[in-house]
Length: 171
Image (cartoon, rainbow, N blue to C red; front, side, top):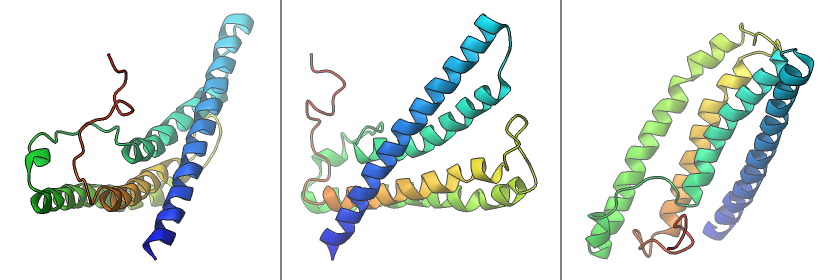
């Protein structure tokens, strides 16, 4: 059962990583169109600026989950890494619970904003803002899923020392 859930989560991770790449590509194209419009044609393309902004917002919230999956978030784990295995596991669970509680409050707290967004549209694209506001609960739920998967995957070694792959660059 756990293996099947883990496979589904890893498939979702690959899909979200692909979405992040697409969002970044669309954002890059939109910014280039905006720059070209301004400097070559002396014309500002408001839709391009809005597309770039919306892509960046979704990119940040989904990218945070991807970073969590790769262990690239800032963490202070000097003390928990010195604990014996049972206490390190307890610390891992406690940290995950506090993080999940924050993400749950974030996801739940944005529901009124999404309801409000049904009646608002973006200035340039005239797109309902509920789709933009939806990035908050979607990103929070994805991060919670990665958090649970992280606890499962790190159970045997909750706070491993950093490896060369996780460092930005080995000196």
